[in-house]
Image (cartoon, rainbow, N blue to C red):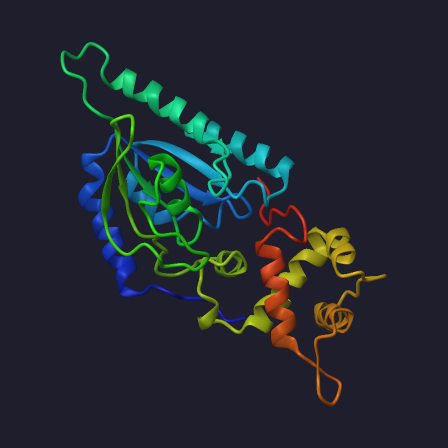
Length: 277
């Protein structure tokens, strides 16, 4: 596939929003997709946040490879970050997050006559689960959620039940993916809208990755006796197994592609991490 380049105007506004408000917060919570911890970390965030205290949330860890989750957590900790593996949709890890935040707030107010609330900003690329985390932290549906990128539209200050304050920002991608694999990984996980891509081609690229990294899961899910070295042949075999056939015995590549992507994103194929620490 051609190199993916997607930088709508609202992404530029989000960058400016983060720059303007960063000085108002004590720490940044960066949400990344545990299946693609590198590709879902925006280098612009690194430039903007700099030395500010940061918590990295490896979200959707329930969909990722457990061993890889541990390796990535260790790597990010060694880089000076606080790290949590979470499933924000189900609330797993939220209590641990509040414990960390409470400790940081106590440290902030040490020796102060008047206590001040901890103020934080949540950042991340589209569709990594920021809105689900915010809803868990506030205890209500403060932020819109969806399985499609671009749901959060503007800045919101939200008050938590413990008095802490949270700034939500829309998802921010970067102007150009220097590594084409980063764009593909984000597309695989749904952080780039399917509407701007060819679903069948994207699924074919995913098969190329899975037949190398997770061949056993691919074979088991789609009841394939053997995998071919050719991704297209494997895709056609999957289509035949599932009955994705058009009149004239033609393969329905689009339906096959959409099914494959949906089953990868939901974890139906198995626990998969596309990037290793």
